[in-house]
Length: 335
Image 1 (cartoon, rainbow, N blue to C red):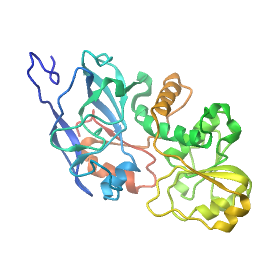
Image 2: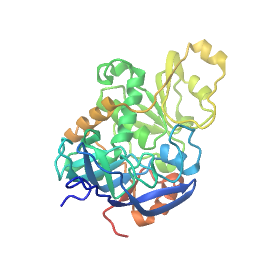
Image 3: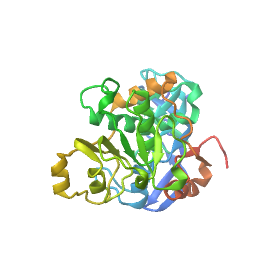
Image 4: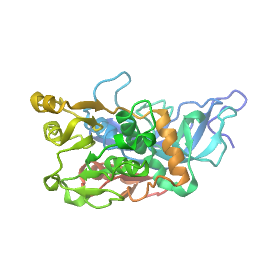
């Protein structure tokens, strides 16, 4: 029975349960009303959704730089996996499809930024990405993996990273979920076995085809490409000192403070700098193809899971526990 699409020109308003940031650092889980669906939309029942330690952290703390549409209360989230339970006649999708969604069309009584943390969401069918059922909760990593892929594209603009393995990062700074995905992609694309720096002992394990070491244990001073994903401030000078002449530093983290560096050492090495921004649709489609085929492994990255009723605890853990590489909200669990 249709519940979100109109019948005989009658509009149906559907309720959903959502994580709501009422104000910075003030969270609730409450009922909201979905925006009306069109024939191009689908209704997705959420199974799993990831908590972003970048975008969602800034929305949670209130440190997100201003942009049009930013305001509270808001529903965060853009890392969702769910099942299509209703499909509009022009959506191009089928009921029962398992899909990844990067947000939703929103709600009538809260902002959607980006609106994925809800039990039911309305999404344009063209904005969903099909998932192999075997991926399950790991499909929630698609956006993060697309971000990793975009970072590799940044060091080789205009060509596929697979075609220029010699340009891929040799050093990756930070062994969180993003750093691990970048390292896995470098290995997959045939790049030189990368080194990953990590200073937190609890995040040293989990390497697959690459090496994780403390920066103090690294004696190299000839890296051709360094990818910085930790977002830590004050690292640039230390990274410049590790570059080969003409080497490049790609900044793929998000930096809350102004980024600066000492000019003479960078001048002497003729250092190059590049910034990797938000993933593009092409990155997402590439990741979907790699993950659905099994070429890119996404397992071993989700370390923590919580029921939605414990969302406040989940966000605290995701943002503050160094043991938490990736937190997932399980919408199937009642408690």
